[in-house]
Length: 274
Image (tube, rainbow, N blue to C red; front, side, top):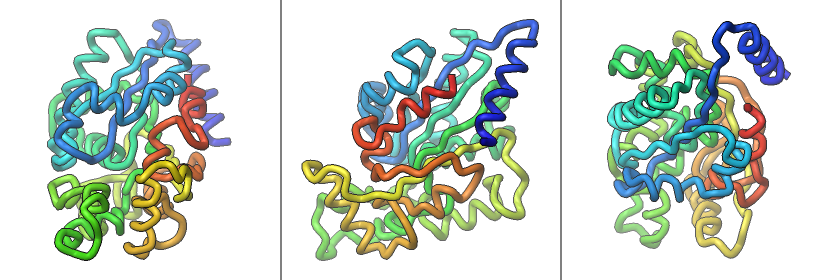
C-alpha cells in the first residue's frame, strides 16, 4: 500500500510539474567475475526477458550497468556512476528507477550513503525516484562467509565458483564486514542516518526452482552447509535482504532465478513502476 501511495504521489507531482519528467530504468548486477565489466556479460546476467518485462516491452529507456564483479563496493560504485551519469545526461533522463541484484544493492547503497565520495554521485541521487533491491546482502551473507574456507575442502570446485573466490567483493559481503559498514559507512540501518531515497526490498525464499540447473543444486547445498538462518535463496537470507528500506514482496525464486524472468517471474512487477 505504501508503494502504491508513493507511486501515486509521484505521478501527481509529475503531472503538475512545468517540465514533465523523462523516466528510465537502471540495472546493476551483483558480484561475480571480472568479465562482468563487459557490457554483453552484464546484460546476460539479467537475461533478455527480465530486461524486456522490466522496461514494459522496451518502451522505457534503460541502462544495464557493467563493472568488475570482483571489486570493492566503492570501486564498483565509481564505475557504475560514470555510466549512469553519461546515460542520463545524454538521454535527458531525470526520473530514474534503479533495479539491483545481490551485491549491486550494496554498491548503490554505498553511493546513496556517501554522496560526496565522488562528484557524480549526488547528481545521480537527485534524479533517482527509488531503488528496487533484489536479494541484496545488506547484512551480509553466511554463504559468502564460506568463501575464504572452501578452497581445499571436501567441497567441489564448482561450489567454490558459485560462492565466488575470496576477492574484494566477497569480503564486502561477509556478515562481519557488513556489520562494520552498517555501523560506520552505510546508511539506512538502525542508529544510522536515513537513506536519501527509499529502497524497496525483494527477498528470495526458495531453493529448488529448476532441477535441470546445476545452480539450484549448488544453492541448496550452500544453504545447508552455511547454516543460513530463516528463509533464504541459497546465497542471501531473507533477514539480510530486508535489512534496510521497505519490504515490497518475497519470491520463491532462488538467487540464480530471482535476477532472471524464468521462474516466479518478477519482471512485470518491476515494470509496474512505469
